[in-house]
Length: 146
Image (tube, rainbow, N blue to C red; front, top):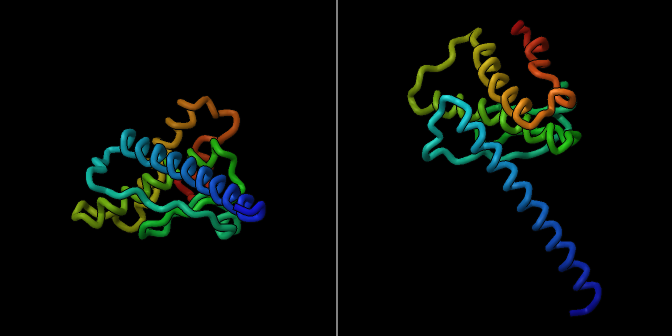
């Protein structure tokens, strides 16, 4: 292999390693959301996790619009990213259960969903000892749920 090809190959391996670590983290977040929530998760595929500056523009750390993708701010620390993934994956599970015939959340009950997601992500924050780095339930104020 010529030196430029070796450099490209090495960069590709590093990139693949980074994405493998990212996927592990996503799987761990999905597993934790399943274990801490009331959802069975059996047969549910984990969502895709993507980053977008749009999330920053709406003043959030993460966002779930429906479908199979969770959007995260690209400006999160590793710990923040993990906690936000767990929180948004709870929303993903809520919607998944709705689509499978479970009672849908009535209009005006979005705070119930937020409470559930924050309850679970707060458990993760406490388990990881991150209370000084990640505010608990901060966005409930913004969502007008308190």
